[in-house]
Image (cartoon, rainbow, N blue to C red; front, top):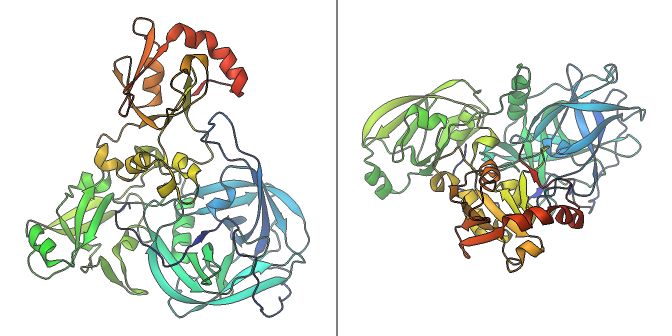
Amino acid sequence: MPRRSYIFFGILLVAATGALAKKEPALPAPVKAPKQLALVRVNVTGQSYDYFRPWQKKAPFSKRALGAVLSNGRVLVTADLVANQNYVELERAESGEKTAANVQVIDYEANLALLEPTEKKFLDGITPLEITPDTVVGDRLAAWQLEPTGALLATEGLVTTVQMTQYPIDVGQFLTYRISIPMQYRENSYTVPLVKNNKLAGLLLRYDSRSQLLDAIPAPIITHFLKEAESQKYRGFPSAGFSFFPTRDPELRQFAGETGKAGGVYVNNVEPNTPAMKAGLQVGDIVTAVANHEIDQNGNYVDPLYGKIEFTNLLTAHVYSGDVVPFRIQRNGKPMQLNVTLEHRDAKDYVSPPYNLDQPPRYYVLGGLIFQELSRQYLKEWGPNWQREAPQRLVYFDRFQSELFPDANRRVVILSQVLPANSTIGYDDLAYLTVTKVNGREIKSLADLAEAVKQPVEGFIKIETEEDPKQIELDAAQVAAEAPNLQENYGISFLNRLD
């Protein structure tokens, strides 16, 4: 569920892209893996799409990881591992035997994926891992890695915190275990299972080698994912669609008209066309209880397993899309109950989609002008610090999209860059402009733009932008005549991709 309060760690967390530090602290010698160890190596090759040159792909990549063997011939890995993959291969640790694999289900928001071997008997003889959902603070978990010889390297760590955090895709918050553990670098460290009493307790999410702190995707999230994966159509994790503030400030409670016992969270934004809006939740409401669990001023409820934890856990790990969850609220001091039917919010339902993986980006090239639709995937081309490094106006649009664009059924079309060409002389330095109209037609998608350019005004294509220079004019005949040379000069197979 999107919210505007961000959690900042006092450390730099390294996303689980295999980036475990190569500094290896001294640990006991690895133990030999049992013959039926429920791990397989996973080898992945693929290519990501280039959002700066959206008609092409980036250089090929290869990744090597471990997968946890589960029941029914499935292998669990992180979604990061198989994003934009071209080929996935499973390799048995004890024999080196290999087979191709297919991605059965993938959830980028929860960072989980299920693989299945193309050869059905490939996992025969391997006893699948059971899942243990009862990990709490103070438990010890072992990170399982493999040496090149197939020997098991088991490193123990202590669970220090169970909390809600952002996952790499940054859509809502999910339950997370934080573990103090001296992890070692190994080639297969892209996906690392965490085990408690020989049962799967979680998967590596990210690791900071300096502080030796690891964040893990916990068993309750894995269990939710696996149960949902059994349905005919995978629906993803649900959300309600509102943002909130704690109500520790007595002046905020007075402003909201809260009466009785202090507690609950203040609703400061309700996303358009989401379950919260459909149920009638409004800005200014105070949510005092969710699913019959009282919420305190910090937004926490008392979980029977973890103690105090943020109530968003009740809306992800505990319920499924289609479930009806009662919300007790106060509105202007009056108690009310709203029944919220939770749904998963698909990435395409955002004005600026939070991710777009395994699919090529949409674009339109017109006389050297490159038009694209704003997405977080595009902004992430500026690297891990994209929120600071990317054009700040576009970051602002992405962050506050629900407030800026209440009409959710639209995209933000941008002029991302200009390729030098005869038709673009004088426009070479333009970039990151918001397109508002083309030939007098309002633009809410690339499809709108594609239709609008077909109707030149007095022989010119007139493009209006929110920022300076406000209007760009292209000679329609010159654009058409130079199109073949433009394609040849810049290696553009097709001048647009709208599907």
